[in-house]
Figure 1 (cartoon, rainbow, N blue to C red):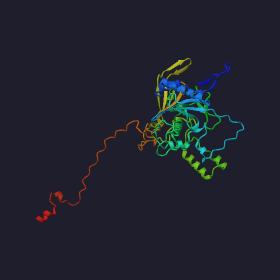
Figure 2: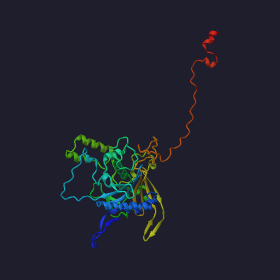
Figure 3: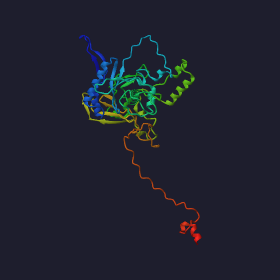
Figure 4: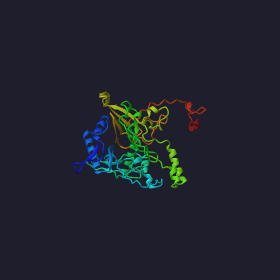
Length: 410
């Protein structure tokens, strides 16, 4: 939905401020999937998004990302794209960022974990507050801890191990992790940009390539919209050859980066399919029980004729089994992503490792189990053994007295 401003001159064309998601329309589809908000609250969210776009003219695209629950308050989260500043044709190329510099910890705006900008609000008429950029060190630290947010951006993060930031930084790190894992798009909707650099763009005919209704309820129809985060909390590693050739790093630093890249293994590319999720933790012979996404179809499943085209009103929902609360719903030729939860990764929805009985995702167990543990079966009866009596005959066992006083009396 284009957000326009009427010009003062009646003969001039309206000025387009940006494209804002029609959340009231998408929320109707999400409610069929069992997630979302009431119609009245959805209207308030949509109006709040338009207000944010008007107050921030640099916003190019804006959508409602979701709601993060907290102990004292909740966060309404909006996701947007800011217009990039025009660059001069003769502008010098940006120098490479050195691994030891503070700038290396933060990816540039529009790249990697900072592909989008995020704002949060407590809901209602509360103002929107822009979150800081995601930092790689914050993302790495967030993977080592579990904490429910309080709803206060300036609250300290009291955890073990220590977290290097306040709650606003932890919230931004968790949003980056959820977005990289759970933001889905239908296969064929996007394609890689010819300019490269990990950029994508909308395909020329996304409607024509939209998957069929039956295919939507399987992994074959979905791809990841966001680039994958690697072990160092970013979406890419520095170019070791370029840095070494320019003598910006020494051999020891090059070896460290090379070791990190080798430990990472094969990294998922942009627009990778969801069928490869959790492939690294699936036990052999048990791949069918370990799925990262569950699918369910809602509503009328019938097919109707509209002219020469067939149309269905059913809603297909894809729910994440790794981040409970992340849902993608599709109806007809449109889809929408939303997250409503505590921003905590959980492995309780996955079956345990058949060999060890432990979670396939260590460190992700929920505070409160989603389902009770299995009732333990009756233990096997223990095998009875003879009493280990000494080899010689025991006088006491024969019923005779062994009291020395009796012998003296005799």
